[in-house]
Image (cartoon, rainbow, N blue to C red; front, side, top):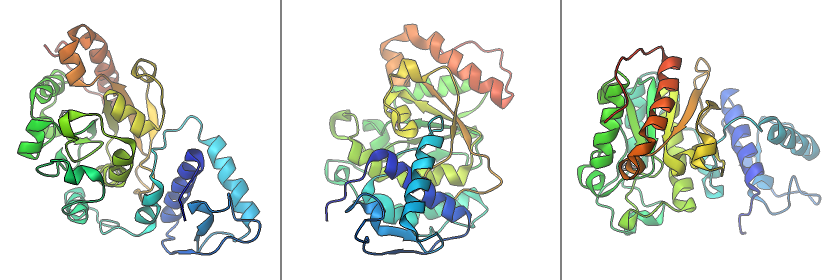
Length: 301
Ligand code: URA
């Protein structure tokens, strides 16, 4: 059966699954939709029901609709329909308190990933992420370029040098933060990753964020911002404010209130248009203020 799921409903379902996980409910089963259908007939959501949820279809349907409207101002990343079963299965890192150990388990689960077409489009290796597993600040870029693909580490090329300078200007070291990308494999010719590639990779990034529990996530550039926020606005419109962020579909530590998410320009864009560095610096200063970091340094050169 073709999986067609309204994006809003899909996000609501992912949120519901996360909520169930927080309640300690891990067992889900599939059942055939009734004559009236649990929700839209034939949708993936109509077939997946938590063992711990009320079975009345109308209750679930209206609850999900309420969740959709309640979430209007909250960032909820998108989850691919094909990932729904990936989301509902318990993860190896659940209950592992040490973030470094949790990240190691997520990396092992990722394996030599062949889940999307990028694995057969020239990638040399998976670029998982790097940095402090207990980082308060996390940067998320778009995807590995040629240098990152060769070295297996995000942001090590020219854009990476500028990111390092931005981090230093904030009064931090690269080792203090955690750096990852929306996709972990290099898109051929450095093209923008396609929606199916982003969505397939997303559960692993969400699990990394849930393991690290940062105070702030900075989305670098439009691809990161749009994917993390599930919003299609321009970068200019998305900048200049914080969003509440919890990784959809992942079990999160109940003591972690979630992160604040800020959006800024991608370092590669700043290399092309250095006039925007001042604006990027304003974004970083907003982050520094929230994290209580004082730095006399000026914007990265
Ligand atoms: N650009 C990105 O978005 N990520 C990297 O890792 C390198 C360049």
